[in-house]
Length: 250
Length: 250
DNA sequence: CAAGGTTTTGCGGTAATGTGCATGAAATTG
DNA sequence: CAATTTCATGCACATTACCGCAAAACCTTG
Image 1 (cartoon, rainbow over the protein chains, first blue to last red):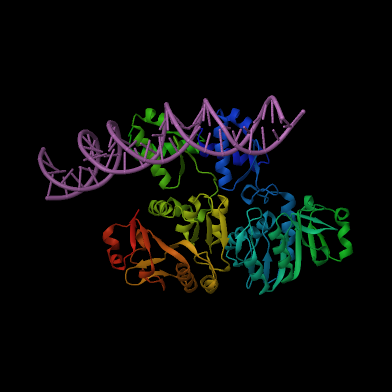
Image 2: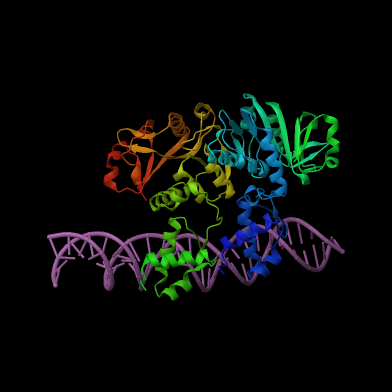
C-alpha cells in the first residue's frame, strides 16, 4: 500500500470523523513509520485547521455533530417519517424558510415545485437540492459553518431582518421542554432564533433521539415554537404541552 | 496488445475502480516502460480529475458522489486542462472569489485546503464542493438564478461592502475581443462586474468553444480583465493582446 | 515511397520531498 | 525536584518529481 503523507492523513481524518482520537504512538506502530512522521502528519493537519493537537496526538476540532458530508439521514426511517409529515404541513405556503442540517436536506430533496413557491435558506446544500427540482431559491449569505453546513454570521442575521416568510422549518441538535431548542454552534443558534422572528409560523422537526437533549447553546425558547413534528410518542413529548404548541406525531 | 497512453491509462483507471492503488514503480515494470511514462500517464489522469496524485503513484479521488450535472464538464479534457492551469495560478492567494458555472465548479472540486485560505462565492454548488474538502467558505446571498446557479441580487452589496479579495475567478458564457466577457442573464452579468471591482486581480476561464462568442449581456470589458486562461491556441485569442492582459494557454 | 510533422518515449541533471535520527528544550508525573 | 515522556529543530540520506532534450515511432501528405 502507498504509505505517503497524503494517504496517511486521509486515514487519520477518517478516524477523527469516526469519533476516535489520534494517538501518535499507536499510529506509528500501525503505519510502520517513526513517531516523527506521524507527528509531522498531525502538524500538517493542524495547519489546515482539521485537527487540534494535544500532547501525545490530536483530537477532532469539532467534537459535536460530524460534518454534513459524512452523514446521510435520508435513509433513516424515523427522519423520513418526520419529513413526510412536514411536507404535508407546509402545503400551500408561498414562502418557506428552511434551516440546514441533514433532516432539512432530506426534506428539501423531496420538495416539489408549486406555483409561487419560494424557498429561503441559509444552507447551500438545501439550495442545491431545491434547484435540482426547479424550485425558486433565495439564499442567505454568510460564513459557512463547518458543523451544520449553514451560513452564519452578521450577514446572515441582517439578511433575515428584511424579509417575512409564512413558515420557518427548523432542524434541531437537541430539544428539551425546559431548555428549548438548542444547537451546537453559537452562530447557528443565533440564526435559528432570527429565523423564528421573521416567520409567521415556526415548525421544528425532531426525530426521537433529539427529544430531551440539550446542545450547547439555546436557540429558541419553547414558547416561541408553533409546532413540533416528531416520531416520538406522546409521553416523550408531554413536557411540551404546557406551551400550547401543536405537536404532531409522524 | 497495444502499449499506448490511451490503453494504459484505461487500465490504470480500471485498477482504481477495483480499489487498488497505482504504484508507479510496479507499473513501470509491469508495462515495460520507463517511470517517466507511467508518471505522464498519471499526470494525464490527474488533469482530467480522475485520480489524486501522491508521491510514488496515485490513489482514487476521495468521494464517489459527483452529481450528474457536472460530471460531464469535469470529464471534459478542455475544461480540465483550463482548471488545472488555473489552480496553479491561484496558489498562494489567501482570499478567492469564485464565480459559478460548471467550469468553476470543476475548479472548486479540485481545490484543496490551505492555511488561511478563504473562498467567497455566490454559488451554492461551489460552496458545497469547498466544504466537502474542508475549505472555509463565505457565501454571497441572493436570489438563485436558474440558468447559472449563482446567487444574484447582491451585486450592489458586494460592490459597496468592505470586501476585498486577492483573486476573482470568472467563468464565461462567451468572451470576445471587441465585446468583452458576457453572460446570458442580466443579473449574472452585473454580479460578474461587481466581482471584478472588489478583486486585486481578475482571471477569466474560457475553454475553446467560448472564445469569440457573445452572450446576451456584456459583463466585463476586456480591459478590466487581468488574465485569461484558455485551451485555445494563440491565434484564436490574438485579439485580446491589445488590452495587455496576460494570456495563459493551458 | 519519401518527406515532413506530431506524438511518445527514455535519459540526464537538478530540485523538491519524505523520512529517520540526534540533540536539547519543554512539559508532565510522582 | 528528579525522572520520564513528548516536542521542536537541524541535518543527512534516500527517493521521487520536474524539466529540457533528443531519439524513436507513428501518422499524414504529396
